Image (tube, rainbow over all chains, first blue to last red; front, side):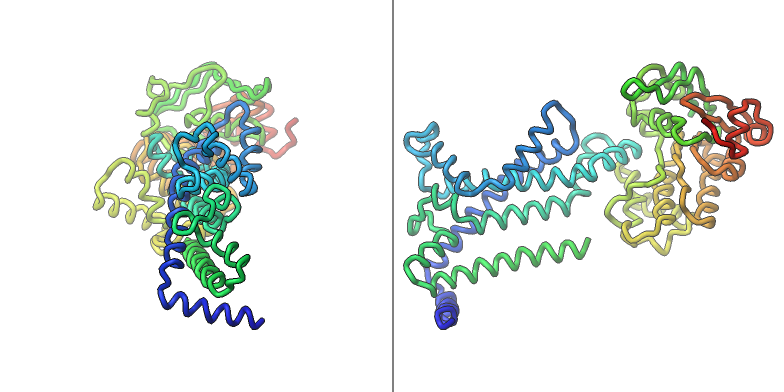
Length: 229
Length: 236
């Protein structure tokens, strides 16, 4: 218990002293997670809507694969991305190993299926109703698509927030592809794991507090949005 | 809008649910379609509304095949309407917005129709907080604001209270009489069919068994199935 109290006290002091290393870690984490969430959203929303609206051969298998990918263990995502971008891998010539870009790619692999799956479920529920409504009110295809996106706004927002939550709190994949290099690829989660090993609980708790605070903010926004709806 | 149907049929997995040789709904007609469950009434409406493609046959609208120009002039209201997740006002305004009408016109039209339907108090209410009857009235208001040439109604007043039904019937009659809108309504309520419709068609096992003046069909039906249905007898 004493360790925890001292840790919290030290964490507050660290945060208030604007420790450069801590803030660098926080900003890199935000950069990597926000970028991966943004790019995943661009991929996942059209994919989820397409899956929810259209029928095609093999759709059942695609959906089952999607659900499987939603629970993809981060270390596997990290390992696969690592094998692709490592020096001997097919994309080794790009020199992405142990860079924030590699971490973004790993997180995209991890959260795109989550966002796609959640958007797909929303589209499955509302898609046909909206399509039919659009048609009966004389909306063209583009207007119907816009209408559907508007109707799915809560589902999309929840999906994006869930994806971001997964990205920012993920440790296995970014550890493998990023390597937790000080000043280059160290993010909050990998830093906490390392500091815990080193017994530096103050810094670990400081970063943990920021991580929790970010999570609180995100969930607060989501709650506010849901209440408004 | 005049609707002509020729040799129309619809099959699902080899089972024929609609099989109509010929049916004409004249411009400005208010046609009620009655018949037991599973007779193919809703499927027929969905085909007329362009929501389903016939297996065979033709439907013409003022002599033309279904196209985007025709779809702009018709609309449908279902038994369970889908309202947009927004306010009543925005729901009713939506068809005018996508037709790029100006703001002032939209405001005036929405206020007018909400007033006529007794929905002014619910104007800024979110759609998911409405009662079943209110939701149906909003769906009808959203359809009527277009002043369509063809209005297709699939049991629009099922499970709602008599006062809401009265308001809806008044509005349906009004658009039919004042705008010359052709109205096709499926109803299980024979009293409603008598109050509203000029003509009634009785549908049974996918076919139009009888069509004619509403009073004649309701009181002097020629086909035994029609009489049996109207008298509440079991149809097998």
